[in-house]
Image 1 (cartoon, one colour):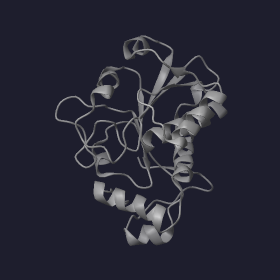
Image 2 (cartoon, helix red, strand yellow):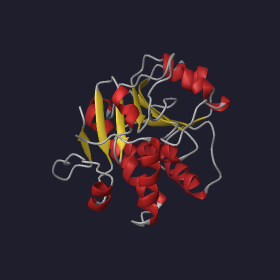
Image 3 (cartoon, rainbow, N blue to C red):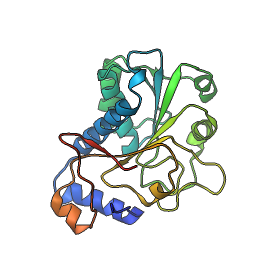
Image 4 (cartoon, rainbow, N blue to C red):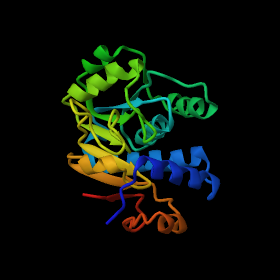
Length: 232
């Protein structure tokens, strides 16, 4: 069976990808975000060229960068993403990713969460707020959007980790996001064992075989030339 990673293993694998295998942050982000867009397009194909918009919620770190890349690819695939980005960063990489979205005519929402929640045109929410480096509690800036995600009836697709979950133990004792879809990146994290949604995909067909063997990841075979593989 595929290995589910704890937080330390996840951090070490990322470090090895950067230091030992010489991947760059933007390179891995592009591969991850594209994989997420492909998985969404696979399940929610009916939203293409339709009135259903996709709300992409991005955080300030790498998970948010994956979300920005995902939004851009969704636009290229014929979907209508809109981005909610409550805490931007001055890092050049993220500024460039945001600029690419703007130049592709993807709206960046400046409204408050209550106004966004009242928009009935969203058919899907992409949760790209926090990744595997997240440690509770949720910072004040993100409490309104987390509450929205906890209470919405709109299907949620979480990128790698459902935001607000403990990377190893899963959802908090009370509440917590309940995504319909989870897209694990590189390898699934331990919290994914608590995932009870409909669709679980693995994305990011970039892991070197040497690294896979070193960490005993036992990754599934990707079909043909696909960049995603179903885990359930």
